[in-house]
Length: 79
Image 1 (cartoon, rainbow, N blue to C red):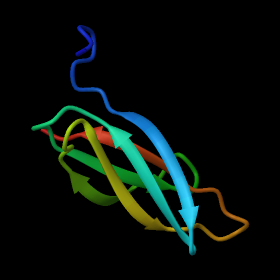
Image 2 (cartoon, rainbow, N blue to C red):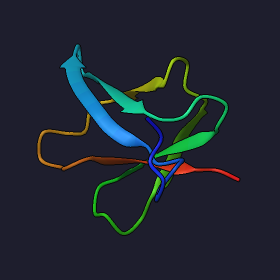
Image 3 (cartoon, helix red, strand yellow):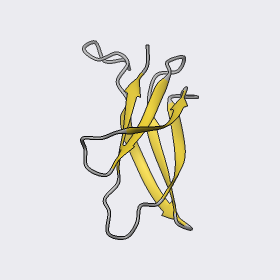
Image 4 (cartoon, rainbow, N blue to C red):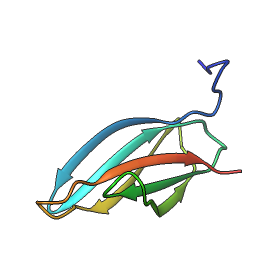
């Protein structure tokens, strides 16, 4: 069901790492466009892709961060 406070919110769903890549999965509303961004410091963000969910889910495949660096992901609703 759609939230009445945040009708277009996306949520992190899962992350799987295989072969030096990360499969990051989000949930969102179909027919909305979202940007997936990555950051190593939670201050500077880089857009990795834009996506539209199919059946409420979308994912990206991103290169894994180096073993010493943290990598953070977020999804942002685009206008």
